[in-house]
Image (cartoon, rainbow, N blue to C red; front, side):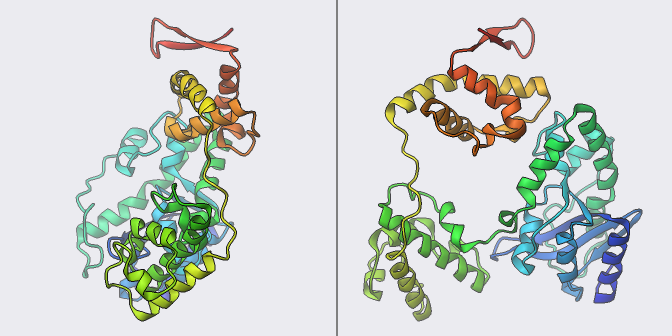
Length: 386
């Protein structure tokens, strides 16, 4: 157990000397803007530290460790962990290896729990019964400490096994690129107010000017939520955000007339929100949401009936988790671009390993150069040149 700065320094020094560590966190995220970090588990070699910030251990040095490209962090499904460090300490992650994504490149699902993955790859079964613990309560129970330690205890041998399978399949670079794309960018740190409008639901019918106002209103909500340490939806729900952008209120009275506003806004909120609306009215509208011509939409709908099973066949043949390659929205967007003759290089299926695996086949499918035919054995469909 680590409860002070000296202990944290010992942990980070050991990780830097080894050049690698395993890392996980336990947190609560129901009532706060950022995940509330309650415990951080770090493993180096055979030693495991349980770092307790609620007992006084500072976490800033661990944020610096996560951002250090000279130290590889072996983690499982690290998205929320990295968001927590990003929001609390401004950490931009570097040199992360995610066992969950890596598993998807060797024929396992890319959404497996750690328990399931350890059993499938290492034949290790964990006796976990603290999944829904309240990690903010002290003292921690012995079973909680064992649970926390187990979350990092087997990560190093799991990574070694996954890397061997990736190398055997020639997928090491694919996995590394995907992990970097997902977890080692500014987006992985979360909480960018200027991008918050993209997460607002049901914004599609707003006029261009209202879309511009939405950018500032959503940014205000994000900033306000962070200041209050509350979920953004507690500050203002999405339908109300959209209605504020549509109505473009100029006064406190105008705000009060908006459905869903209620009387929850204080004087400071009212002033800031009206200022956000006013600033939005001077902003150049963001690029319009895509509107697909009906002719193209119908062609895409027709070809998608073949593209969906084609994607499944390619993933089965390649022993890849389909969710890593493309979802239905990715397929439709790529097919729209192919049919319309647009630049494909900026789309996921138009670059890198996804293009090699599936994108080129989809281009040929639209051009009528490939067809699907029946197989007598699984996967029962095969792709053939015409």
